[in-house]
Length: 160
Image (cartoon, rainbow, N blue to C red; front, top):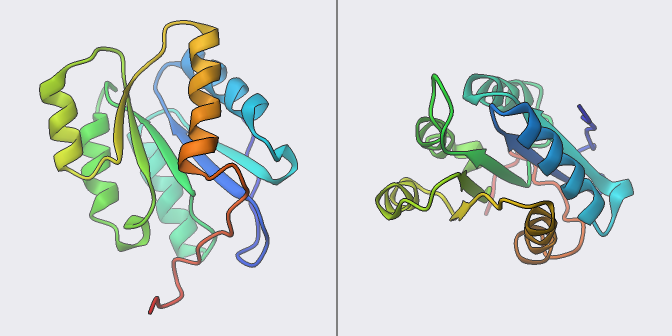
């Protein structure tokens, strides 16, 4: 697992990938790293379930470390579902401005609508080919991270 942290004053981008499927974690992680236009300023944090993701967020807040600039969250996980984790993340003021994209294996309009109502920025059906995942990875950098390494937000600094 690649985990790299940037100082709150440094430049870089951190993406959190939450998925209970180890193959999906590896494939998505690998293709996200390959698609990154600034790999030396990119950190990928992986979590194998919602509990681990929430613990990592909590630890970052406690340590006053930078938080993820974007979260990719699997909808269908055992234990805490993606929707449960989404609700908890959206209840955190520290993640209020963090884009959270839900990944789902099926295009279920009802579940997608519920995720959007609870604060997901987008619901994406998981691509079923390496090529499609690579295209999604590129789109994530273009659309959600602006194709440039953003400055990390300091969740502990009061915003105006």
